[in-house]
Length: 230
Image (cartoon, rainbow, N blue to C red; front, side, top):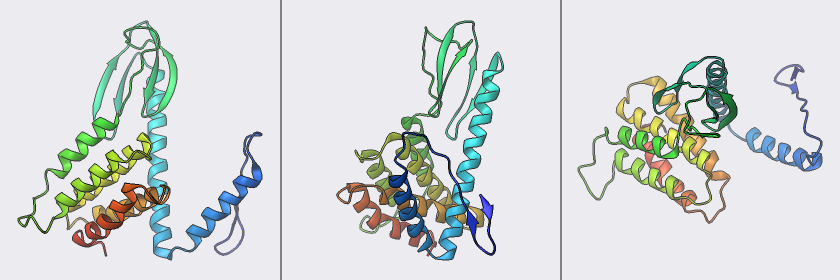
């Protein structure tokens, strides 16, 4: 990436030999035009979300790297914490989707898989956070707790959404619930705005007939209004 004057950059990318460069080029400019059409404030929010996600990825990479170098290691995910004691058996470790063969994992046998964060774990954490919100006193007028519960259910039930995307979307629901618990926290309010945009971006990649797209079109504006994000 190279600076080229005011608000201009030159970007070069190396791709694998089997990639269709023309197709990749078309997809790149399609996405570029989509982002370029956004208001400046939305672009800044999107970039902030990208930076935060990259920081989390680097943190997990460092965590895994340190774990592979030590006889005893500590694994922390966004949802839970756990400690694994090493033995002299061999196994494959899968931590949040990152795989690698290591020696010394306490495993039941060869190629034992250890998953640091499952969709069920994420879902349980999100449910616990939502349940800390106050329920609506009017059954005909759902509050933030009820709306987030509906959205969580729609995400988990969507068959066209990959599990890793479901987990990421559920993390955004948790952020929205946390913002609902602390409406005066400016940092959480900012994070909630980013979460709304990430959820919209996730839905944009789904088929038009997806039930989650319909649910988000109805629920996200209502959630944003209740959280005073608009």
